[in-house]
Picture 1 (tube, rainbow, N blue to C red):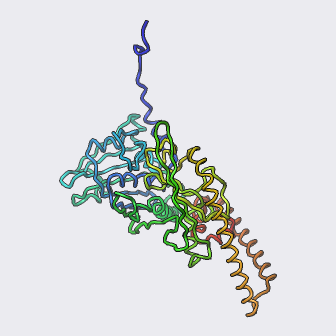
Picture 2 (picture 1 turned 45 degrees about the horizontal axis):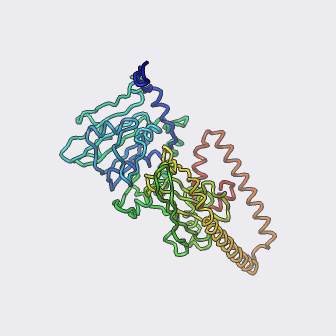
Picture 3 (picture 1 turned 180 degrees about the vertical axis):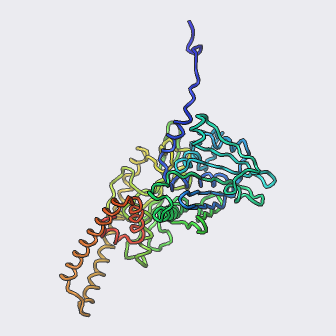
Length: 450
């Protein structure tokens, strides 16, 4: 009688043609894909990352160049393998699954070129990972480019024997969503993506950009010639921001034991900001209501920007409450981090342990918000009395004008929605809504866009 170990086995290799296309849709968007590549730059010890983006008359290309350690040829080959085998990630590494470079890049482009130089006295090593080639050959192959044939777009940042790595995206089919790919609407959409990317990277990597990550050099990121500035979601530079005591919780994942650190803040009320612009900027890219709650960091890199992870529902009256939750990569299993490193699941045990404290902290944020609204209402009434003495309109007239203004704003918003649908520019309008929420929360509210 034969044992199970003696049974015949066959290797079943996944279809390169089918699986490579499937892996394009693992959850990345334009911003998160580029953030995933910057993770690799940080792991490589880079202090500078330069993003070059060219519209190129409707055939755009994007390049990410760093001054990190670079890679030897065998390491480069491994980096371009799906599920690359890394012997062991360091405790503070941002990498996770060994597929980020490929899935992030191919979520946006079909042709990925990587050029790298590990030492000044070494030639440039270059490889191409092309989905069209994989589709034709149906084999998991990468193309080796000789040192004297590296395309200028990939080699330029490594000229004069500079050390580092360049990732080049070409054939960006996911950005060609316009009827006229070289037209003005397409160009404007491309530029908006870069503006939104600037905001996103400044938020996700703000600790690295402001130089507060232990044992890591300060990071600088450029998009074209513009430096990305760190954006602190907790307004710690504002004197009126309240910092509550840190809370440390034990977290379990199988046999692993680790910790999660909760650092709560209560932000200033609207009237405590010097200007409406500064208040709007503090609301972040998604606005004040969407930004309340838990900001979750893995190895100091932001994974989730707000939300309550099932602890409670969003509420206008608690939007001043924001807290950082920090955990180490060794606890990934407990937090069930997703492939795109964009979302985590709060462990049930941790959620239960946090409830009592979170309730107290949020209650205080609620009280502070309501007190601020009361002060703002008093200020408006004082302003109204002054207007009446100087010949201003009566309260009734002002109320009628306000209602008429809101009706007009609603009518304009509806017209814009219809126009966007009729002209196939819904995506552009969504970008406009995001920007209006960022720069003028009150106008966004009037238009029903908050």
